[in-house]
Picture (cartoon, rainbow, N blue to C red):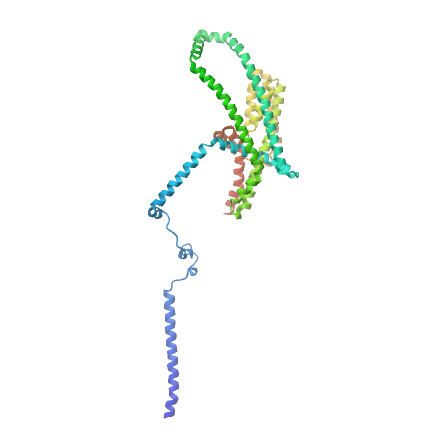
Length: 412
């Protein structure tokens, strides 16, 4: 009996041990299930959806919008005041230095036009200083030729007009047309009365002298403006590569290569356009001089300069200049006007279909409607300078559209 009881004890102990283990396993399993049921998931265990992304649970963002504006009124009012003050300061600075900005724009425009010449000379192995000197020499030579040709003609024509003015007035007064008008309206008495009033009033004489002095001041201001533009052009042209590199470094490093490509494409296109348009305008002035000389018109040099200057304005400039010169030629006779019109307008067709496409092949092609709109807008903003700069600006805008916006839209 004792042996049987001793043998039953290990069996009961074994069963109790097994039972305890099973009970412990059940309790542990229940605890694990409870923990899993009430456990908050980790951020990376949420599904990647716009509502339950990990950053929504891990990052604490400061409140934005109207709540922040209301909670920090002093700071918000101060920042708004500073922003408005800076905007007004920029406006006052720009509005008070419009002339300086015009000079800078003109210098940049001329610099981009001369840079292809400098680059070409550099490609021959010469240093950039030699190319800059050659380009500036060409620019000064063109300005000198223009001034030396224009000023003597203007002085000569003004002197001639002053000499023949009394004769013209006498002939007009002695004409039957003036006599008929004088008999009807007593024009001579009215003119004599008004002239006497004007002479007797000393303020009119002062105003006249002030106008003469104002004209002299305007001439001095134009000369000073030309000097400033030439000096700025010289500095810009000499340091253009350095300026470009510093501007490229303002962009993020990952985008500098793309920025450099677009910048070089825009400046190269604008530069080749300016050079090409200068060549076309020069040829236009030469042909106009030949046509005026063949037609037997006076002041051939002045009319040729006018035609060449008008040819700088794209699309409408050359045609407008030709029409104006044709109308002036009618004073010399319809035969002279017809001869000039035939020669000049035939050349314009050759220029449009043969010369311009070959010279302007490296420039950006601009639709006619955009060119006209750009010229009108530029002329409204900056006058003649704006009309001349309109096409290069439109060309740069088209480069950005073709190289940036269109590929972006195609990739969407």
